[in-house]
Image (cartoon, rainbow, N blue to C red; front, side, top):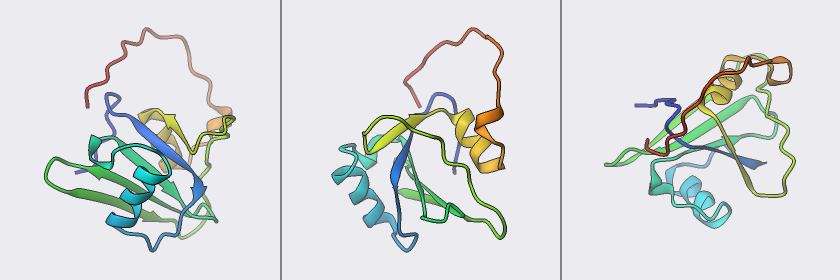
Length: 120
C-alpha cells in the first residue's frame, strides 16, 4: 500500500521516463542512474515528458509496488531543481501537493518545529 509518510525518503528522477517501463526497468534506473538501491524502502518518482503521467516505485518488504497515475486533463508541476544530480530529494508534503495539482511556486509555509527522522 502506498503511504506518504514524512518519515520516508522520496527521490524525484530528473529525466523524463518512458511510462511503459515496469518494475525491473524502473528498479534498473534507480540502481544505474541514481546509484541507489531500489530495495531500500525509499519512494522513487518518475514523470513522463509531457508531465501528465507519474509513476512511484516502492519496495514493500516482500515485493515492488508501482503507483501509476495518468491525468486526463492538465499536467503535474515538477519542482525546479538546481543541482546537476540525476535525482532530488523531496518531502512527502511536496509530493502530495504535486499529486493534488497544487502549485509549489505559490506555497508559503509558516515556521514550525520539525524533528527529522530517517526511519520509514
